[in-house]
Image (cartoon, rainbow, N blue to C red):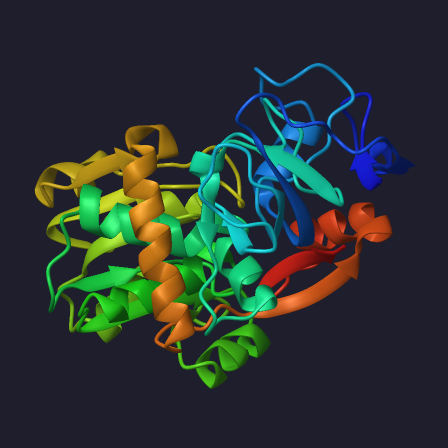
Length: 327
């Protein structure tokens, strides 16, 4: 089968197309024939050697994907059923989805409803922005209808997913940010309320849009200098949930923003949630997508053999929407 593998940590060029035997499922495992796989920041973090506890080389990257059941294993799914991979550590502690076939724990498979196509399902799961936003708002922030949300990074999974999920949960205002006027205009054309950071600061933009009150929740998938500014943009008693660090791992915080705002800060990890919680949330998201209540955006679909270019595009190209691999 065709796959992408690497035998050492390094830059994008360590990713190589290979022909390798189709994996044999272990007892109970299901075998899935993949159609589309997602490119997400974690793939880059693992490949560059910035994350420990990975499987021995060679590693096949990829944590998300959509395909059809080839061999059901211990699942109750029929062969040919369309599925989305939900959960698991694929591409990290087990071989991942950048391959024509992958063996998975049946507990990590969700049926894709008839009302949603493969590309939308793959975009929904890639970057897990929608899932992250749903779990962060409902489980960590205990978000209530009428509240306000800031999800920085209008082109990213958390920025786009955060805005759409906040709206679904009844937010009175859901805001994102853009690093240029062109991206801000594209964000607004997509229906997002976006702060143009090339024209005003995040804190000033939030103050303008909330009449000085600040936002109740920040879903921070960007980090770097954004985190300190976002804490300063919280309403009194507000919550910042730290999810990712696409803009850097270091920030400066004015501690008086934490104190005077009585702010709450949470770190987000999927390990905080059970597989049942993850599956329930993903099933809800698939239903919302099938009914067009949320619309995951796709920036570009690359062929499998161009995986290194696809990963570079995600990290350096400033995509607006998800980046996928076609198998």
